[in-house]
Length: 401
Ligand SMILES: *Cc1c(COP(=O)(O)O)cnc(C)c1O
Image 1 (cartoon, protein in one colour):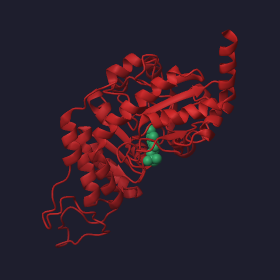
Image 2 (cartoon, rainbow, N blue to C red):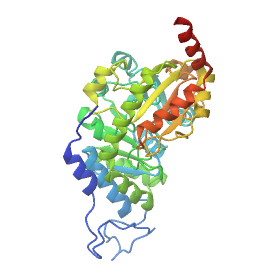
Image 3 (cartoon, rainbow, N blue to C red):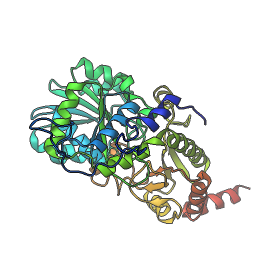
């Protein structure tokens, strides 16, 4: 599977938001590790006063991300959840309603069901892969539709343009959690989205070394409101994390290309393996929404979910037997990580809600990294070989000969 990333994006990723330091010639923008900034006179300063409001290192990251997103400079946060919390608190007030995809990041579910519910903000979790279901869920007080596509961890897709029409017709805004593909592979703002949401922790920084989040928009009034709430809550990104994220961003197009190619290889191998009962990867023709994937994505990302025969026990067995793939939460980094959504990332999501969303207890999520994909395949191969179900398959084959 091969695809080309718009070469202009490569330049923007490397050069966006930065220029050599005029004072010293340092090629990279220094880390502005400073709480406060000298004011020339009362009310006269260079745009920075206190690092909870703004900081030059954060500013650089925001300009760089804005170039990738095709937006105004983004608004960056200490975590992805801080970005999502700020978005909800800025757009919603008591009595308001938000429609959310039924398969979303576990933290988003927790925020709505266990924190914001206390403040009179109502959320409906809807299968947004069905635009009619999304439309039917609209209420007079619906202010926001918040979707995640591909969704964590089943990779179910939502048609962004179709939902944008529905949200806008109802006078609501559309936000897309674009963490799994980023605007490089899925330019959501061009597809009708008002707010592009990212956990920069994942592909953007890409090296398992920071946590962070961002919101990118083309509306300057709403951007300023978000900055105001961020300053009030105190959840801006830090200078050092911003600097590291800028460094990660430089190789984002290159890394994504490799992640996509490696994941596709692993997905094809999984699909052909007799102990695997189900593989979910939008780039496979067998994926239920493959056509939408081709329409909406430039390529299909680095995440592959699958299930092995033998249910939960076999799934847990695989995760305990892998040696090369790291059993850890997170995704989108150089190292291949394997997770068990039902007990790890989605452990707090109520069982019935998990079942309805297709997050079965045997589901395994693989974030395919940048290593040789053959190493990942060999690791899964040895883990599968030890499963009781693999023994049965072998016996069945012998008996049929
Ligand atoms: C990780 C993640 C988040 C939350 O981001 P943090 O940086 O961990 O707070 C939100 N949405 C998705 C899809 C994620 O994968």
